[in-house]
Image 1: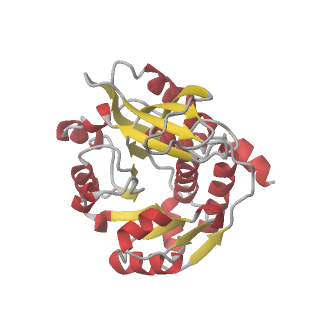
Image 2 (image 1 turned 90 degrees about the horizontal axis):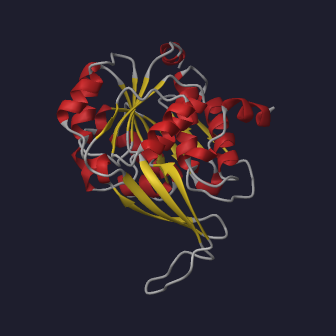
Length: 305
């Protein structure tokens, strides 16, 4: 573990090649049932997308993060959100297609249901990928989700450069099966994604199967109310949740991802990185929205005492 940690202590660049969405968030008494029509109690428009949310979390956690992605002419809020959070937007470009968006239902218990429209997020070209990756080098970190196109090509080119690839395979679908998962250094998955990837439901079996399938990768498995697990090559550690009253769980996983990746790749031990990420996501769910709910690192550290 010592050599691995030493290798993570260098202040490196983190590239998040990911989605940016306008989130239309409807407050409802309950999630709409098939055939049902109900009146929304409120509507808020937030910046979102798993990519943007995770970039904001990375930046607020203290990472040197660059976001690469596409927005439409309607994406000014998305660009400003990144910039105001400390994300480098050098590789954020505008295209003719409207920005991706999401219709999010949030019930009175803070649970959510989401419909995604990919929009500009699915207009990535190989030429754009080459341009972006040309500015990064061996040892830099690449964070990916599954809300943009050209993932197989991005992973292939990044792996050839010697970048550390971190994958949050969400949403999990057949497109991911085209990716070379053996190039991934770190997986961040929840129970549902873990089951989709391995066919296993028990956390320890998910971990066992993940290591069997990808022996060179480390795994973070989030378990909702049961906390999270880190499974490395030499150790497994657990982190319970910090109990809070949830208002909106939309960005909890993205907050966790951004904070864990930042802490882990700046050299924190896995247990400490999990603890930091768990507190950050606990704070985030007490607020409405996704990116706007991500706390600053000073606040997280203060809560942890």
